[in-house]
Image 1 (spheres, rainbow, N blue to C red):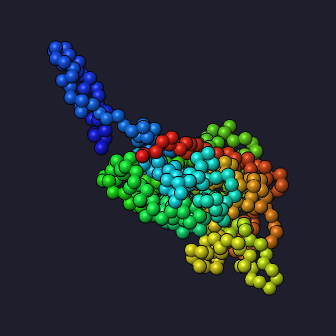
Image 2: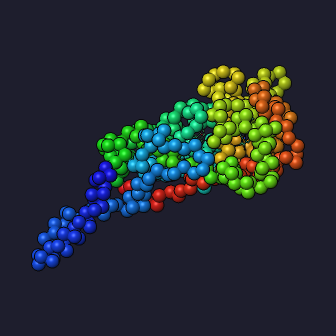
Length: 373
Ligand code: HEC
Ligand code: HEC
């Protein structure tokens, strides 16, 4: 493929050299056959060229050697598909409607709004460093086991993109311009839902986050963190016990916990379990201990995606930190580490300053301006 490409791009130069040689020999330049010139690429291709895989920023766990299925050709195709609203039933919603680049591929509203303005009950999680989790579990309740499997869900979710897989494929088969890019990414023209999902997942895998103030401090730059953020760092990894769950380069254990969000005491005489508004992980395992348990979210770029939690119920980072400190009504499955968190009111701004120091780079992008037709 690379050979084909470099040959094609070399053709105009070859044609020019040949024309010059012919002219020097007294022959007419018209002797050069017009087919020898490379056809200029369609405008959408110039707008979204094949790019090398990104170099992971400092502190990001990304290592493309471990995901050989992620290739530059698939990423290019996936970038179109991720932003292409034609994949939804009425052409209004793309993945990026709810996973916006400027919010770390999450969003700035409490719960997602999909097709025909329908509002869901959960917030869209960020998609950052997503191809390198500790355990492969996706969605707040972990019901998908890979990025590829995950990507198939929203297209046929009635309140997200409202389409069917058959509908998505019918649309893509009708877009002649997409065909060559499936061939370049997968070796032949076939367009099926697994390929669509894999290309989208490949694009998602290139959305990285690292090189935050925290990463630079960790790498030895003492001045990268303010004294307040440094105090917050010590608390986070120490007495406040945050790193019992928010651990590793992505600040998540890929596990499920009830941290007391979305539970209200039920009326007297009713079992405490009835107080959960969203069953969380229980929907997958049917284990009562998983009621109200949600996947620990990454904290990278957390300041860019208020409001917080699976239901978007907390408006600010300060509110989140205060929540961890509260000793109010305790939900039945409340995680012991949360119950043990101890810090003084004066330490709240320190923890917030540390969370703000997790804003990084490596994911910036804007939607392609034109799409294959
Ligand atoms: C209408 C809004 C909406 C659209 C459109 C949407 N998503 Fe989501 N996405 C969400 C919500 C909400 C969740 C969490 C749902 C849950 O946990 O049950 C989610 C979860 C995810 C996750 C899991 C992240 C994690 O950490 O577990 C990924 C990855 C993702 N979406 C990718 C996509 C892709 C790819 C598309 C397009 C094919 C897409 N989304 C379309 C709202 C949306
Ligand atoms: C027992 C595991 C656990 C501990 C300990 C813990 N967290 Fe969390 N954290 C979670 C889970 C799980 C969620 C998501 C809960 C939900 O949405 O219901 C979460 C959510 C968050 C969020 C919101 C992120 C988002 O994208 O919405 C922030 C911020 C946060 N935690 C910071 C902290 C801080 C600071 C501490 C220490 C004071 C801490 N966490 C301690 C598991 C934990």
